[in-house]
Image 1 (tube, protein in one colour):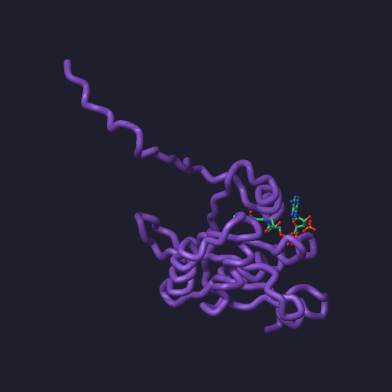
Image 2 (cartoon, helix red, strand yellow):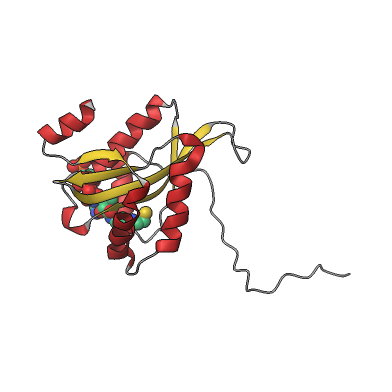
Length: 165
Ligand SMILES: CC(C)(COP(=O)(O)OP(=O)(O)OC[C@H]1O[C@@H](n2cnc3c(N)ncnc32)[C@H](O)[C@@H]1OP(=O)(O)O)[C@@H](O)C(=O)NCCC(=O)NCCS
């Protein structure tokens, strides 16, 4: 609440939790960046983000009641062999007309406050290496290169046969 008031006084965006009813706004905003509507993709993502163990860490940003940005994040509690609680930032989008006015920063700030309150110490994300805007933004936010490698396997390639002597 205090942050909301601070932001409004600074003419920053109002940050609130993302709601299932934001689905349309999310899809519309994403289509501006991605080039086409991805309803199915976001239906699943939004369901996962909003249902996860009842902890909502996905956020929306509004300016004068206009939906100007959002982020989708999830919290993992020692799943998949991970000992520590970690949060994963899945998507961050700011409306092109509202970039450079502190919306991304305000979303990240609120996310960090929520995660700190949940005593989560690590936030992970993945970025396409050619998304320079996002890479620079994340660099400014303090993200560092993770000591992990992401691997993809094209399943249309032939399955390697075992070698016979
Ligand atoms: C990257 C993005 C989130 C930044 O949001 P924004 O609201 O424009 O950023 P802000 O105005 O809050 O800027 C915050 C800081 O980041 C810096 N920054 C933002 N965009 C930057 C860029 N492209 N290059 C360098 N720095 C940048 C700002 O200079 C500012 O720095 P400061 O805190 O030192 O003043 C936004 O441009 C975006 O949504 N891009 C598309 C993201 C995308 O491709 N999403 C889909 C995959 S998840």
